[in-house]
Image 1 (cartoon, rainbow, N blue to C red):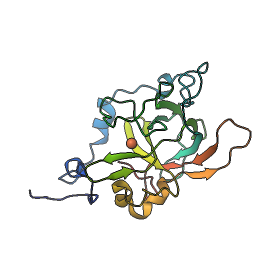
Image 2 (cartoon, rainbow, N blue to C red):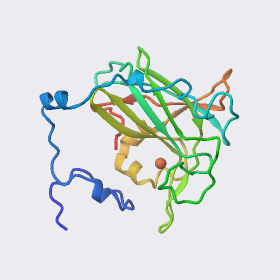
Image 3 (tube, rainbow, N blue to C red):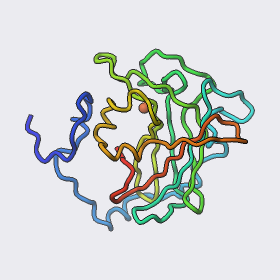
Length: 222
Ligand SMILES: [Fe+2]
């Protein structure tokens, strides 16, 4: 197959990145078209109470298996301006490395007390916070024995734009061989949550993950 004008390198063992990589140079849709064709619904009407705490399905139920953690951060523009009322959608595998999803054929254990999805909004200063269960790593490619290190998927929506990224964890054995981490190169460091202690709140550990949606120091988006 001829590969004209490829924009991205391809991870060495990712057999889907080839199909997902644009074959032609991307062109920006004119601003007038972006604004006129996209329905705009304020993000605050979408999220419900308690979605910030993914460690339990509802406040009256017991917690899911595994280690409860907090993730906090600030969402900013390229120039450092905080983005308020920005919708973050979060999903991660359960303690055993299993997603509650029809396409997860791993056979790993499902946890009835873990949904694995949540939504939060940034506040007036661009800050967000949620709790979840520390995800298990999972064997993404049994055919070649390739694991995905622990990670949390995050989607950031504002206006008509949606960006999707992943937060990694420090010092994980499979970070170095992860195809997405390899694509990120030096920028990988920015996609690793920075650990902090959480005295006085009901989680074991916190991770700081600041998101920048553009510019030289942007978070790596898929
Ligand atoms: Fe994943």
